[in-house]
Image (cartoon, one colour):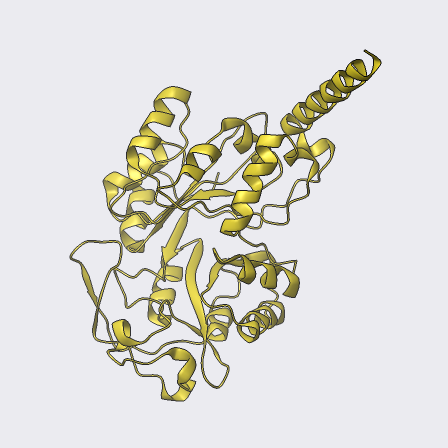
Length: 342
């Protein structure tokens, strides 16, 4: 009898403490700082208006007033950090070779016309700038613009060199980096824990286990951005208002990948809460957030390219939109009074 009372009291105490800390995580954890706030985000610099990941694209986007640039990084044979989405040069340049096998000076130029990945049957014809840029070129040209860096390959030298560049240009507060691969994220964090990192997929699974066992409120989290692949049972388990509120209160951004429209429609109708909007043909990543109990949280939606999609995203509470067409998004935001961060 005494043992049963002891177990019951212990379990009750654990459940009550977990529930309290789940609702009020700042009692145990310091809220993570918001690294930056972005409404207008240019995907690969604006791949629908200039050749993707070129300095011309980045300059055009920044001149328009974009709040953040999104790009990808690889390492050349002579260990230069270059901005390129593909590891293989075939799609972008017509040359079937790996970037890692070619010295920077020998990299071929981009083709004159490239397809826009998230706009069906759309191609962008470039101007004179067809050069694959160095990451340091981007940092040199745009010292105050936040950058989202996807480390495309598990390469210790690449991670180290990207970190060195971020530190050299004093951009730790203006950069987020990572990958879905857990080993890459671990190496990024070990190399420089001051640069915000993404949740890897294995860490998403771990997060689920912690949440459903009530252990999450007691565990420190190093990441600030959560990405969830879809379609997946994982998303159904993660789409919990209590979990969102807890992560939000700890300053962690929560993006989702390839979320089907029917799921978000169901969530909005059931919860009566403007979480986000997803167009299954054009988005590769969404982020959801809540603004409750004076807890602020960013919402980013990737990649939207039409005004109707922009409108629905902002109507449903998106903080920011990522697009291949920065001029189109800029015009929409200006026309609807959305350009100023609030």
